[in-house]
Image 1 (cartoon, rainbow, N blue to C red):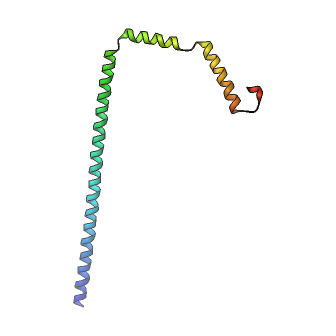
Image 2: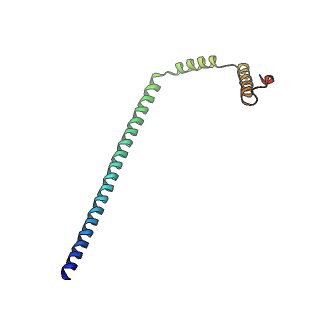
Image 3: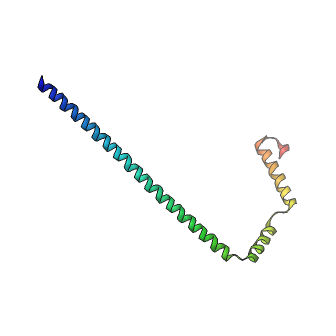
Length: 112
């Protein structure tokens, strides 16, 4: 009977040791994953900061390259290309008729 209790005690001790080793491995694995995630996050933050610095440099370069007179000239050209109020009302009316013709009753010729 004495040999049985020694065997069962050593088997229990071996099971406890295996359980503790498995727990330690799992704990180390989770710690490693957290470290990898932190490193990746740091790299992403560094890339974002570099992009922000590059964007700021480009904004400074653009503002230095564009003169106020050039902006006024470009603004006048854009205003000249914009449709007039009567053209806008014609565009709005024709698009409304087209939307009604296709969306509500496509077979009714009075809406076309």
